[in-house]
Amino acid sequence: MELDKQTPLKLKVLHVLRRFIARIARIFFSLYYYNDSKKIPPIKSDILKEPAVEVARKIRNKEITSVEVLEECVKRINDINSPMNCFIENRFELAYREAREADALIQSGTKSADELLREKPFLGVPFTCKDSIGVKGLHQTAGIVSRRDFIAEEDAEVIKLLRNKGAIIIGTSNVPEVCMWWETHNHIYGRTNNPYDTTRIVGGSSGGEGAMQGAAGSIFGIGSDIGGSIRMPAFFNGIFGHKPSRNIVSNHGQYPTPNTEYVNSFLGVGPMTRHAVDMKPILEIISGENSKKLNLNEPVDVGKLKVFYQINNNAPLTDPVDPDIETAMLKVVEYLNVKHKIVAEEKKISLLRKSLPIWFSNMKTTKFFGAFLMKDYGMMSIIKEIFKNIIGCSENTLIALFTSLLDYGGIKFEDEKYKAYVKLRGELENIFKNMLGDDGVFLFPTHPTPALYHNEPVLRSMNFAYTAIINCLGFPATTIPLGLSREGLPIGIQVIANHNNDRLCLAFAEELDKAFGGWIEPQNSSK
Image (cartoon, rainbow, N blue to C red; front, side, top):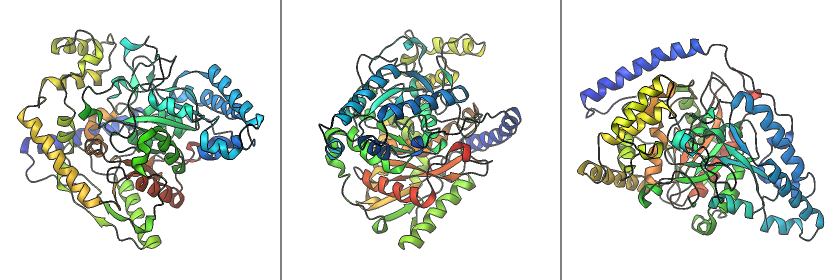
């Protein structure tokens, strides 16, 4: 990993110092957590290992009932939640009622299996979503203690759309405070653990949902992504996750929601699944009327795609890409050449070095982050709360408090530097658009390292740059699992396409799912 020659000396020194500290700290983390990982129970029901579309088919064709599938999900959640702490609130009683209603409709014979496929393609299929996506009657806290008693009065738009197509929401999963950190931990529900190694992180902010899907707690999940919040948890937990093109899926019913349309366009709701084949039908439902813009059912010939790839972003303060991840990407490049005669072109997009300042600047609005944490926020109030946190007396997490301090320094909304980085964002978007066209995909690391130990992200905080920059640009992006690292942790890459070409990402994911094996059951992973 090479820094740009134009990188300021102070930043180069800070970059080297941070990497040194992170390496030393890794030794201490590995000693602290040595032999501390807990095994999660093996999956006892084969139905939990099957794609959601196959579960739906079996329910429609009376090979299994919705109630039976729900029972298996509930058993699995009870099995995994003690070691993992991923599932935080259930609506099992209502879900069982809805499952019985689905079974009654099927048994009545008033509609054929083909009619049910057209009208309610996920009839009777249980699913979960992250806590920040509203589910009527359940808490919607976003991990914020001051919202611990807040009950959603209606379903978020994506939940309404899925329920209208027969899917059954069974509960919600854990998130980091204000959904703005990539380790899932808050002072209401605590910390969530990785199913492959409980001493490791699950990512964020859809971390609880990533862990749920990695451990097969429900048939599919729904997350949201403003800086990698679907793709990083998908990567860390060995599943597929798709961030849709900008402004395709409604954000109505989420909390927090950006207070400008511009920043709102960076936020996307999408599917999190163990099987690539499930993402397209779920996206078709949750995108509502906008699904017409995506032409999801237009056939994609992977062999005719132009493929580009880049292994490192070379951004200051980020880690170099782990050798296992680099090897996995190059195996994909080799596979495409052998199977489809595709010669992938390696790129060195220099502007990706500025991913962090572009994302941070473009995320600026008139609303300060601290306003989500406390009523009477201000620099002194936040500093006071930091000291309270150090002695264990604060309701807020330390990382959220430090994040809120960023509003009081650096670039300001609408100042000259802000405008300069908005312009740079536009330039980078045009570089990608011209490169990708309507038949190109870009392979890029989802994250430079496999799942870190708990609390370790504090020393590697800027590694989210690999996903965050794609939110700024508005492109669709899909995380694809590609096996396990030498430590037995999931690894993979993300594939990116041009605006509204989500179908290219999804087709590519399906191709690699078949070629590389996709999701691996945690108990079948080896260290």
